[in-house]
Structures are given as structure tokens and as C-alpha cells.
Length: 489
Image (cartoon, rainbow, N blue to C red; front, side, top):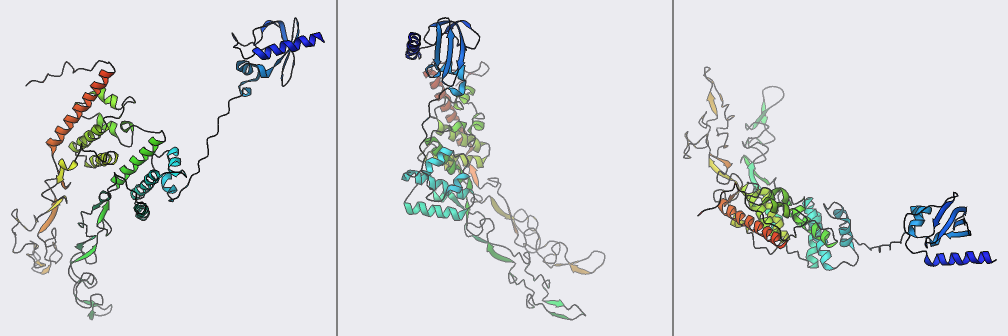
């Protein structure tokens, strides 16, 4: 009885001091005696070994009797040694509250295809308790995604919802979503060669004769297609027809898809930043700043590395974007220049650093169309005067439509104009449309010197900000290479 009481007291002491730190490596006790076995409380058992083992612990036999070692009182490293990693009780992580998601405006399918939008961002947009600002961003993203996918019916629906709710996004300018079609000048239709007669005004079935032969014999009958007139029934012999513009499909406007994509991506980045998944502007591969920065003239290489690193705070983002626009324009990459300019307008609606019309203007020669009408070089001379008897006539047959075959003396249809008597290149108009030499077909003229000066100043600001950053960090400011000549007055 006394012996059992002694064991109970020892077990109680062990329970009281078990959480104390264990010094040294844990020795796993087995059926083989260990000369000196140290318990978690620091006491030592002589010649101890495991006599019995069950689900609750070990019965240890030693020189002074028996000792029951309960698994529950073991420190964590002992539990790992005896029971393995899985037996260690891990603290239960609190379950994240289940968000109630609501797709009130039926935009779920669009957001699934939204490039770059994180799962957390989707949850934030669809949360049931979202405020008006969230709904505004959600609908704007849906609008731009629909337009970028050329789904105008959906885009119209979201636009009407935005309008009815009285929402407004500062960066969104409706007059920039659609541009006037340059082909039809916004009319939705334009005059072009009649597709039925290919611009010659003659009935195709009777070849302009007004009569057709019967299948048998030499008898001729009035052409049913043109009712004997010989004129093309589609254009009534006018040679041209007013048809819907193929470029804008009769709308008179062309969608600026790049503008829509840029604004959509800016909204995506804004949502991602709100849920803690922000990507810095200079490191965002979708924007492509990195490949432009390395080409900026006179930008210090260390400064360039800094702006592309995690240490950069984003303080010079506007300067960097404007510098990229200038660099793209100077290289003639106007599509990329427009893209970055859209990005500036979307990210910094009140920005005053760049007014692109100061550098790009409508070409005076072509009025923005990229093409000009010139005297036809075939039927007129350099001064626009006729080479033959009449402007626009075929020089080969002098506008007659017939020509004498050499060596035979017979008269037949002119092979040069197929009997029309008109100059083929200009189709009788004496004018041809050529690419504008002044703007190289772009429709815009470019202030090169102004852009170079702007870029030079911006690069100077970027180098200056980096030098200030190094000074604050108490790091040596890089100096010019010894090979660089010093500037003199």
C-alpha cells in the first residue's frame, strides 16, 4: 500500500513540473535498460526500461520500483519522439467566416474571364454588404470587359444600369470609348464603286447592250435584268452606290478597344490592391514599363534598377509613365504611346503633366485622314493637266473605248480600258488617293524637338529622385564615368 502511495506522489510531482524545458536530446526508452534515464522534470531513473505500454502511457521499471509515464504530461518534443508528428495536437485555426456572395447585376461570367483579377478581388466585389463605390467599380469593369470583347449589347446594358444608378467614374470619358470612323467620316455610309457592275455602270447580264440572244438561232430579245436599258440595275448606270461603311458597320464610330482594356486593367489593379494583392506599376508585366525604362537615354543604370525593384515606393510613377509616352512617340510607336497615355488618364485623372495634343497634332495636309487626293499620274502630268484630250480618259484609245489593232486594220474594244474609255488607275476621275507624305499616313504630325526636351527633363528628375533616395539611405551617389566628357559652356 505504501509503495503504491509513493508511486502516486511521484506521478503527481511529474504532472506539476512536466511543462518545464527538457535539457538535451530526448532518449526514447525501450525494453533495453538505460543506465540513467532523465524524466521531463529532471529527475533520473537508474537502469530504467519499458515494462508495459498502452494507449495512455508507459509503465517504466527501474532500480527503485515502477513509474507510469502518462503521454498527456509529456512536453511537445517528447510527444514527437514517442508518438510521432501526427500525435502532436496542433492549435485549431479558426474557420474563416463564410462570405455571402451576391451577383446582383449578373456579371459573374464576365469576371471569370477578367485578366489578372484575383479570387479575393472577386469575393470583395460580390460581397452582399458591398457599398456604392464597390458596385460602381464592378459595373465599370463589366462595361469595359464587354466592350473589349466587342459585346456591345451587354455593354449597353451595363452602361444603362450605371446611368440609372447615377454612378460616375472620373477616368471614364465616353467620347474616348468611340472614335469617329475615318473611312466614312462618321456618316456610317459612303459612296463606292457599285459592287454589281464593278463601277462600269453596265448591266452584267447583257454587257450594256440591252439585248440578249436566245439560246437557239440569232434572234435577240430585250434583257430582262435591265429592261433593255443596258444600265446596271443596282446603280442605274451611275457606276457608284451609297452603301453601309464596312469598317464601322454603318455605325459611324469605331470602338477604341485599347482604351477599354487599359481602363479595365486599372480597375482590376485597384481591386487587387484593396484586398492586399497589389502589383507595383513598374513590375506589372501587363503594362510593360521595364522594357521602356532600360531604353531611356541618360537614365542611370542603378536608378533604372531601383525603379524596377521592390524598394521603389511608386512616388515617381507619373514621371515614368510620361517618359514612356515620349520614348514611344520618338520611336514612332504611336499605338504604345496611346496605350500609356490612356493609362495616365485612367490612373491619374487630374494629372497635368502631359497634354498629348502639345506633341501630336492633326496633320494639316490630310486633315487627319492619313491620305490625300493627288492628280492621277497616268492621265495627267505633274501639274495636274491632262496628257490627252480630256482628264480621266484612257490614253490608249483617247476615251473612245475602241482601238485599231496593229497590222490588221480592224477596230475592236480597247484592251487597256476594256472598252470603257476611262483611265483605269483613277477610274475616270483624274485623281488618285495616296498616302500622305507629310504624316506618313498616320494623320498626325509630331513635335519631335518638344518631345526630346520633355524626355530629357523627365530623365533628369528620375536621376535626381534616385540620388535623393541614396542620400537618405546614406549610400554613395554614383558619379559619371571617367570616359564621359565634362560639360563646358
